[in-house]
Length: 439
Ligand code: NAD
Image 1 (cartoon, rainbow, N blue to C red):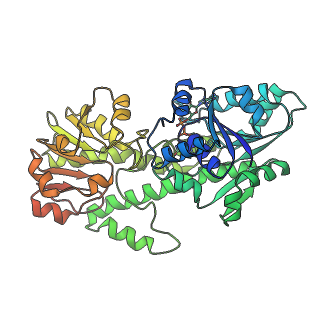
Image 2 (cartoon, rainbow, N blue to C red):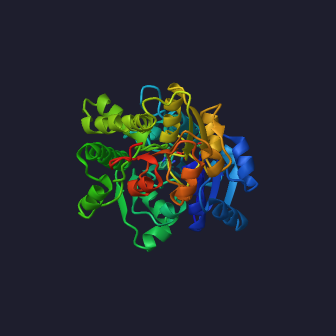
Image 3 (spheres, protein in one colour):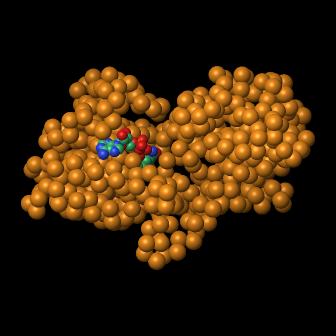
């Protein structure tokens, strides 16, 4: 059993902390946000993630997981210190590393004896090594520590399962003593034969950016193919299935729609371009991926405008789904929010519903009109946009939907339904990369 401090209790820190406690480690989760820590200590989870509450409560009850705002005592009690603070995009596209460096100074000021510092935040290549210099500058030349880069690949919405049963785990090490500590912490994954890559700090950091940029490129690629399918009468879902049957390509991340969002792909792709700029490498593919993605939410509004006869001005549009994907309340870079902003700009009014992300969306878009359920949202609306493919929106009674809508027009941003179903119901319908049903 190892003793761990997890600095930052957001999506990554809290999930990682709870799961590492579940592996049998003793974990102290620390955050500068005292309100968050107070709530967590009382068993209140600050965001929606399936299975997380149960796991936090169980590990708290069993005495392996605790919450603290006392930096010095948490550092003193922990052999390994994980950093999982935010690294958001700055105005110029580079990653904001202020929280990461603030934490490095905190660790340097308070550490005594040997520590393993594990970087879980997504940081530009070279950052973990620089953190070492920051820690040493505060702790003194004799400071005894080793560094690990341990990028996190969990997906919001299935974060617990992703952490417990990962496709792979990547570690970059600065020295051999860190390896022993990490092996002990992650013992269940070493024991069950999980694919584990041990490498240098820099390669580990790059694996994270390269993986995210590659998946984002798959999404933008299929969206570009989808646009061409619409012109040429092909069906992108069939095309994607045919492509995915090739094991060299695989079926994942080939879903046409309004593109990628969330807290990672948008900021990590632009940060990679900026890394290239800093070292004179033109990341032209990644730039194209970002550019193609930026067009997608606008394309959804183009489709709706066309179904509405050329303008949405003065119309009341219902939007189903606000989170950037199902099973999360995270609305960072959600295409639903971009679509709503475009609709407002064009003079439409919007009423929206999401099973869990409504309040977060309202914080991002003050003035957003929220409905309490699907029926209240769509009743009497002049058009409907299905923006996120929550299961609840995959199982709609379409004839009831058609009956409730004031005007039967649907833009399906996630290709949840089939044009034939809409044709039968007399609904004007458009999706991505498939034939439309004209009014
Ligand atoms: P988040 O914004 O949800 O949480 C960050 C937490 O860090 C907050 O609770 C904040 O209060 C805390 N914090 C900030 N400064 C601090 C400081 N000086 N000391 C202590 N705590 C501090 O962020 P997140 O989504 O969990 O992402 C964390 C990192 O993990 C980012 O680098 C992100 O790119 C990466 N990541 C995120 C995901 C994801 O799906 N969210 C997946 C993989 C990797």
